[in-house]
Image (tube, rainbow, N blue to C red; front, side, top):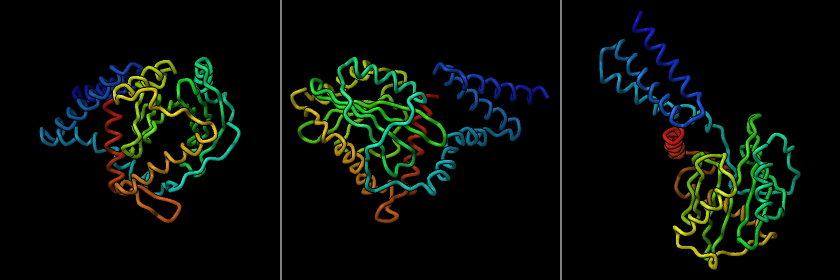
Length: 272
């Protein structure tokens, strides 16, 4: 009875730490889940080998929901942006703050767009700043009645490279082609100033000077955003991450599901 209460107490303590905001406490909660699992299996089987397998099962567990969620998921092979009014901004408080910060850095709005055929309902608010040679997007997402937003800063070089810095901190769900470089801020709470500093550092790390950056053109930004997505889809088709279902749609292959599993482990190790 005492051992049972100890295990229950460990699981409850792990749940409590996982519910905390600080990252260190959440990591401690994850560790306690593993310790509680090993302790429980040891008491039942008295086998360290089986207990180790039980701990490893925590790593394999995401494979099942990934397989179920991607089974009927279809991704558009060719993406399309259309002019469309934005949803009510009251559901996206982070977006309102990002707009104010972009305007403070003299970014000018140029279009309001909607991704057609995306798995989630995505709207874009596009900005540009010719002096910084930057374009910026604020993405508003509505997915299964859950709303969230994030922003991205984008630079394009004369030789076709794209540098993007975003406060969307989760791992990507598709592989990026070699000419696209992504820098992610550690927290969605980071602001435009943090993103600008990180973006400049990313350019410096790749030895890119401001003279090598193209000045964005408001009339062509939309086409460039579409081309970026199309290039990602084409790259993942070549890599076998996704496979074509028909001329318009693709789906994740078994290799793609393993890629998503590896990405979920990266996410777990980073925020757990």
